[in-house]
Length: 70
Length: 445
Ligand code: FES
Ligand SMILES: [Fe+2]
Ligand SMILES: [Zn+2]
Image 1 (cartoon, each protein chain N blue to C red):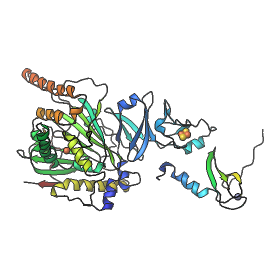
Image 2: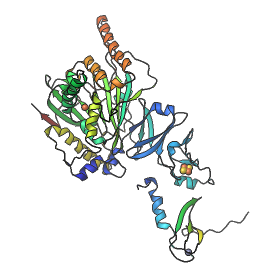
Image 3: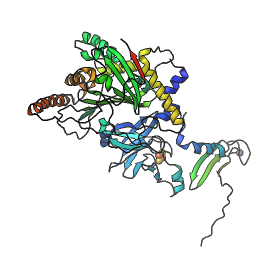
Image 4: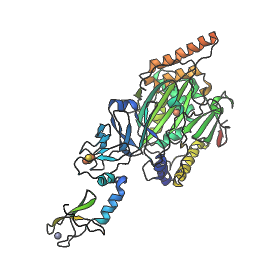
């Protein structure tokens, strides 16, 4: 299949960054479906062995706190 | 002969191939203007890719790849709005620059919108055709060739052919075929179907010649009974690189267009302007188009008209003709020269240069050299043969076109008697633009 060449960089980034192993039981993940929300890339993950489900977000080197109401 | 690899390289049209990258440097007609007036969005296939082409209510055109960046539904089924094309599936909207300007189900976020930009091409209308450029920036200008801007009465015959465009272009540098395919073969078909084929098409070639020039290759011929002084040699007519041929004669001006739709499909168009001496201008709010027959009901090629004969030859060469087992002769020197030109342009594009015929200078029109007295048949006779024996026979405008030529001829007689000059629409350079015979020449006498 010839991919949509416009978004080859996004496809590469997905291949590079997708989580590979279950954070609970460390077997290979069965699903890491990427979606975008605001500025964030998120991976909706599922492990078939232990049924763990969760979202993983790449953050880079930045850690954000929350901003209190003011 | 070529190797299989060379044939593959020559005939490719897809992005990322050497030839595909050359082809993406040119503008192509992708619709008739009347199509988008009838319905404002059209699915277009060009160079092996699909696109959505649209026209906004105020007349602005846009073209983007067919798959929606969201989840790949077809934008060719989109909703045309003043500010762009909206995907029918979840309503993402893209403007003519390809910018995503609305994602109805998402929280406002320009960052996400920026990431899903659709690569937009450029679109312009000219001569009743809608033209698109889908290559890299900066886009060249759309060349305003004479046929698209000149005075005259127009129509466009067309057909989608099941073969690669290169073999059609090779026909444009093959003068000898006229004498057989449109001469001897036409006569043979005529004898069986009970009509008389035009005599001028069967005249014997005594010399052919080819000259590379800034828009392609000028093709020349000397037919029996003529000399170097005849238009067919002195002026000739050009293959317009990489996908057109400019022809004419007898007050008819034509661009034969061969748009590579994909590797094995070519949109063939006969863009014709009837503009004889003595032409009396007629109103034409839209340029009419008509499909020309390729196959009959038994699936055989329709060969009793000139272009049908060409189409038969092109298609029966195969979807992509097998150049590994062909046998070119000396008389095919124009074909070899064209292959060299394709190769040169592949190298030019790789070196970051503009390929042949790229136009970046603003201009009113570009006139191409084209003989006026074709096959030294006499103008009016050529025009009438053209109407009866060519694709114009199938035009819904046939009667009007005959009248255009007949009343123009009348007009010239009257003008002559009254001692005043007749109006002749300007089109084609009818005098020599280059010294003939500089690149390749073959004598067959
Ligand atoms: S697929 Fe186009 S908006 Fe969803
Ligand atoms: Fe022909
Ligand atoms: Zn697990």
